[in-house]
Length: 83
Image (cartoon, rainbow, N blue to C red; front, top):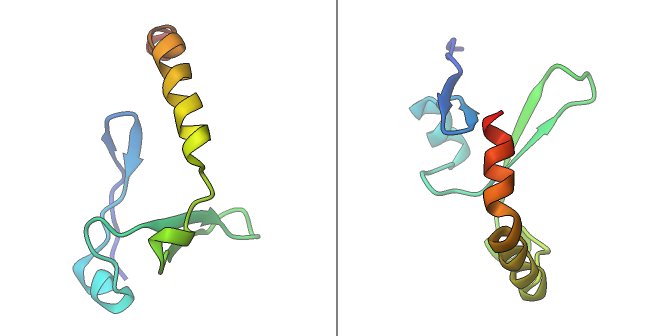
């Protein structure tokens, strides 16, 4: 067990994964993971996503909509985030 410090990276809080845990789990830089909360409401659970193809249900149509939405409302959302 190792105590880690949560640090800021952009708008996210980040925790480093120690090398020995990365080795045991097979998580590498660029791996897709699922971060979830256990039923106790206190424990953060990290699971490696084995197959990138099946890790998302986002369709190309949704991505197209999202790009249009971000183009139209992105500046306003970024301004709101600063407040």
